[in-house]
Amino acid sequence: MGRTSDARERILTAAKTLMLSRGYSALGVAEICKAAGVPKGSFYYFFASKEELALAVIDEHWTGQRAEWTGALDGDGGGDGADRALQGLRRLYEFTAAELRAGQRSCGTVTGCLLGNLALEMSTGTATVRERLREIFDEQVALVEETVAEARGRGEVTVADAHEAARALVAQLEGQVLFAKLYDDVGRLDVLWPNSLALLGARTSSTTD
Amino acid sequence: MGRTSDARERILTAAKTLMLSRGYSALGVAEICKAAGVPKGSFYYFFASKEELALAVIDEHWTGQRAEWTGALDGDGGGDGADRALQGLRRLYEFTAAELRAGQRSCGTVTGCLLGNLALEMSTGTATVRERLREIFDEQVALVEETVAEARGRGEVTVADAHEAARALVAQLEGQVLFAKLYDDVGRLDVLWPNSLALLGARTSSTTD
Picture 1 (tube, rainbow over the protein chains, first blue to last red):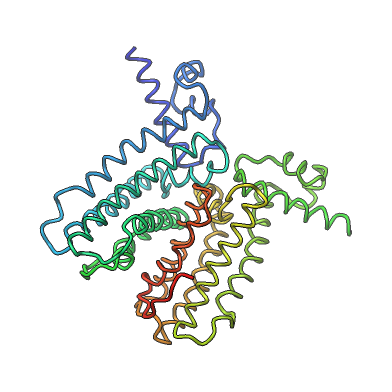
Picture 2 (cartoon, rainbow over the protein chains, first blue to last red; picture 1 turned 45 degrees about the horizontal axis):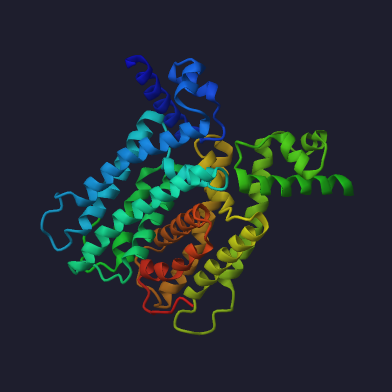
């Protein structure tokens, strides 16, 4: 069983790398198996279809990313300044930039956000994948909303609707990551923090770094 | 020549519709020809490759959209209120929402922004397409920047860097259009206007409608 478990993991890793660089539609099962170094029979032992693989890749990706988001937003690294809750948001942006930079080093180019890429490529197609992506982005908004609500509770920001503000922050993140990918420039994310302060009506005027 | 001109136009229209609903990679030339009702020979008479067709679709789309953007941003429909320059931005968002709604009516679902979709799908692939998309988004930012600079000159907004602010507005637009597509809900764009006022440090507190 050790060997088959390893094959599943290798298929997932190869598929994620290929989906990040080339999208989902252009990929074939044969190509994924070749990159993973597993026979096609193994693929269908683990996954009923390419779509089922996509769902597994999405889930594995978000499980890891959610842990990072939670750590950044809830973490205790913000000190005790006047914008302690808000600093969680800043750590989230730093994590995102670091993740894009790591991808850039390994792929040679900014590959962007796997979930955003798939949202645009697949949301008019497969209902199952679209539904899963909606749930994940809802979860992202909920995580950010907690931070915004906390910041508002502490008087760090003046924004009225924490839910709508969280949506705006996640949309801004996706938009800037799109441009980071298109222009192959992670520096595009530097504006996320000052723009978030403006969107939230922040009382502090923290520097961008 | 009348007939061949018509064939080119039909190929472009069919390709744009298919690219909006299913992306670029998943499309084949045969499928495009079938949807356009032209023989495959006609296709290669007009386009050397699928990539050349994609560039033509992008150019035709942006030519039409640029006229709309210019009209909205420069138009004289903003009255002479305290936020006259800013109102151009508001008309741009209204145009975008109307365009998405029209697409939703004809396709049954929000198909999003053709350029943003292609940016995520193709920017790690074809250098020619990526280059063209960069030029177009640069142009979009330049158009919005003019409006922001004018608004700043008239004291409507306080933002320091008009170029950076314009980038933020276009990124916000792409991010919210991504979610309008994923959630099949054009209402997601309603926040563009109030969020833009926050991002720009607008002096006025215009209502959202």
